Image 1 (cartoon, rainbow, N blue to C red):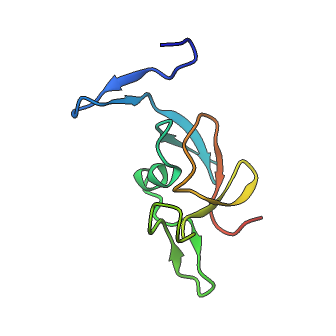
Image 2 (cartoon, one colour):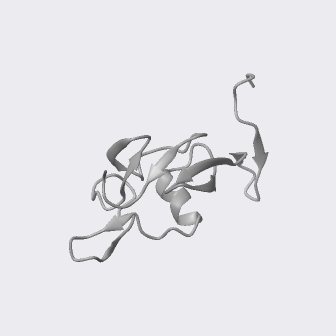
Length: 100
């Protein structure tokens, strides 16, 4: 294991998962695991919506494979990023809601 690798810890299944890191979502710290999808991290943190439709209904991850665009967020200042295709990394800055 190199000096820059994220330490892993065993899980109940015997697979290893990197130690958690903190990302910022709408200005609030959220704990997530490096390498998991951002959509997964948002759902695990209790954030059920990533935006709204034109009628005001909540939008959230639907297909989880990058086809539907329902999970679009702004990541590190880049708007219209599909959260299901973005991998969590330390220091990630995410904004849900309308692109600004």
